[in-house]
Amino acid sequence: MKNTVFVLLLAILFSCGKNKDLTVKVDVKGLKKGTIYLKKAQDTTILTVDSLIVHGEEPIELYSELDSPEVFFLQLDKNSKEDEVITFFAEKGITEVSTNVKNFGLDAKIKGSKQQVALEEYMEVMSRFNDRNLNLIKERFDALKKNDSALIRSNEKAKNALLKNKYLYTVNFAMKNNDNEVAPYIVLTEIADAQIKWLDTVNNALTPKVKESKYGKKLEDFIAERKKS
Image (cartoon, rainbow, N blue to C red; front, side, top):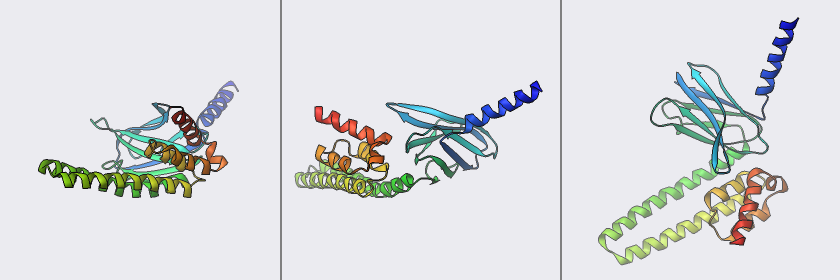
C-alpha cells in the first residue's frame, strides 16, 4: 500500500511539473547528441527555463510558464565552439519547431502563434531594409575612398531616407497589428530611439489586452522614462 501511494505521488508530481502554460515541441533532423535549452529574457538577463539532453532520435519537449505572449529562444549546444539559436514568439499552448542539425538557426520552421506569423511577416520586410543598408555602407566606403564629396552627401541622404522609411513602416505595421503583442515588441526592439510622437501613436492605438501584456507594459514604461529625460 505504501509503495502504491509513493508511486502515485511521484506520478502527480511529475505531471504537475510538466503541466505548464507553454509546450515547445522540437524536431531537429540529424541530431544525435546535444543539449537543447529553452530561454527567455528577464530584464537584462537571459534565463534558462527548461533544457533537455538529447541522445539519439527521441521526442523533444520543453516547457515554460507564460503569463502573456512573449519571445523565447531555443539554443542548441552540440559541444562545439558555436551555439546556435532560434528566436520565436509564443503564446499559451503548443509551439512546434522543426529544423535540422546542420542549419539549426537558418532552416527553422515555427508553428504555433499568431504573434510568430506577424513577426515573420515583419522580419521579411526588415531583411530587405537591412540588405539596402549594407549596400549603402559599401557605397559610402567607396565614396570616402574616392574622396567624392557629392557621392558622400548623396549616400548620407539615402541612408537617412532609408532609416525614416524603416521607422514609418514599423509604426504602420504596429498600428495595423494593434491587437497583437508583436506591435509593442517591434517598437521596443527596432525603433526605440524614434521620436516620442511615433511611440505614443503606437502605444495609444494598442488594444487593452495588448497594453496589459509583457511588452505592452514595457512600452508604456519606456515611453514614460523617455519623457522624463
